[in-house]
Image 1 (tube, rainbow, N blue to C red):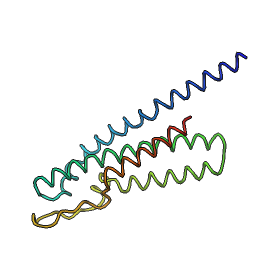
Image 2 (image 1 turned 90 degrees about the vertical axis):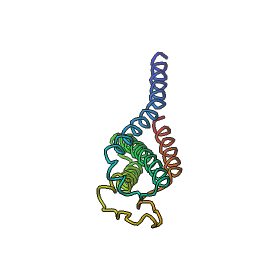
Image 3 (image 1 turned 90 degrees about the horizontal axis):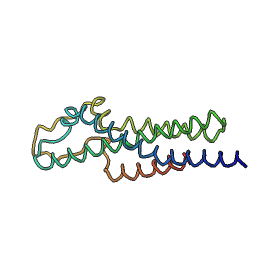
Length: 161
């Protein structure tokens, strides 16, 4: 009977850790996203058209996109760690497939991140201020990033229970 109580306490402690792990990963992702935006600021600035208010709005949107996409990558890394450990313990083929899919999602997120793209691809400058402003390739709405973060956070939370 004493062993059963110890096991229940251990499981409650593990669930408490799961509740703290997800916000911790999100906070670390926000910090890394902000840091990567600051470090790549000049490269990202060159991608925006020189159009006053529109430029400022695009700059804020780009900053949120960089931070939110980095949070998504941090959650993917956490999921990869969780499922890699699970695979090493169980050797289940399904878990191996899940690790491969998570790795592919992480690779795709890295290759479409605006910070990576700002260093990897030369973007055309906007010499004509009358030219219609366009967003850089690989740019998505921050709303899409928020839905992605929610999905990954729920997946991580459920994976840690």
